[in-house]
Image (cartoon, rainbow, N blue to C red):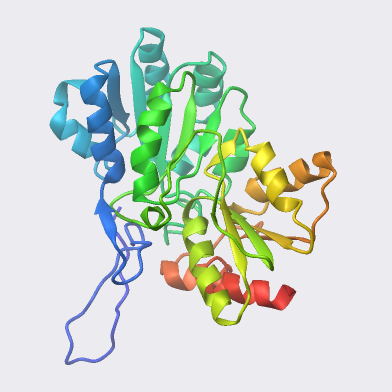
Amino acid sequence: MKPETTNATTAPSKPRLTTSAMIASIAAEGQATKPAPFGHALIEVARRRPEIVGMTADLGKYTDLHVFANEFPDRHYQMGMAEQLLFGSASGLASEGFIPFVTTYAVFASRRAYDFIHQTIAGENRNVKIACALPGLTSGYGPSHQATEDLALLRAMPNMTVIDPCDALEIEQVVPAIAEHKGPVYMRLLRGQVPLVLDEYGYEFELGKATQLRDGEDILIISSGLLTMRALEAAKLLAADRIKAAVLHVPTIKPLDVETIVAACRKPGRAVVVAENHSVIGGLGEAIATLLMRARVYPVFHHIGLPDEFLAAGALPTLHDRYGISASAISNSIKSWL
């Protein structure tokens, strides 16, 4: 598929600039990034764990698995454009003691191969690690490539652990953690030049744990993945208006860190906003709302997420503003609620 291009300038005297909706970066101009953190982290773990293999369905270059393939060509399996075969084969390898790290796009895993993951991996509790690129609204190619429902689908699957990392640092830490974990894992994957954010906060990933990155008495933003990056940016914008926003990062969507989330939401006089790069149906927002109801904790609650509709195609910055998940849109929404 040929990437669509957009003309960044109409002035005839300037060179034509193009961007790809498929591989568009989520990093802001000048933001620190690291290249292919997933691929490089997997190499480091695989050097210690000979049972680790890498598998993909014609998308190694676009999921950073090509880095692993170059280092360990005899431990890399290119299955072609056959996602159901990919996951069925991964289950078979896991049954023989291997630890497959399987990559594709999130839409292909959560929709095209759902039943194969459900029956052959989750149903058998196989030790397969699924890392999927283009989660939520990280592609401008429209509904065919925007996985806006993946968390809802995968977190409903028994035995499946679900993780939504924020940045390059967290991806580097998640890979060895899930290699140690016994059982199937679904991990949302940021690939290419991935922003580096959490190093400023001395962050350390722990499976199943949420971490408060900053404190604030006016509002609590609970977020995961890309939206934690945006929540931190929004908190800085809010601070300019003397609004103190706390940010609680929840990278493990399943199982949730019940104790930490409930304790953070019990603080009196502080509204709670859940922000996620996912449909408002079935993701982190609904999971936390249900959790709070069961714990009998009733803060003022708001939810920022993608609408329950098929989203448009276009440039990511424009789409993020349009659907309310850019830092400025989050900041404006919060100010309207206070």
